[in-house]
Length: 126
Image (cartoon, rainbow, N blue to C red; front, side):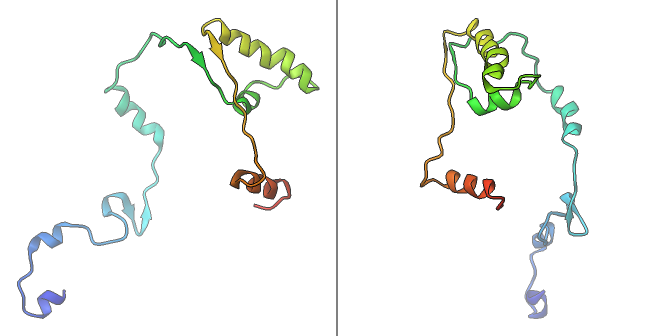
């Protein structure tokens, strides 16, 4: 605009670029278009080949908290029962296909950011 008002020639290529906070192709009235991730699956499936064979794995190192939170919680009333009837059978089933299985757990050191965030959460502060 200023170049035009000053009498200078304007390079028309400038108008080929979007001039806004969000690209017009991805937004409407200043808001990003919301998309469904599931719609992209059909497009991607045609471009990949399905792998039917599992890779050979020598060892597994799962996150202990992930195991505890993802395995079913049945009628087990104590952690001992949950360990005996849910966690250990899961670990034993994994041992059939690997030679080593190490479980890792988070450690909350008192001077770490994770510890501070956890303390705030436990106190109801977010």
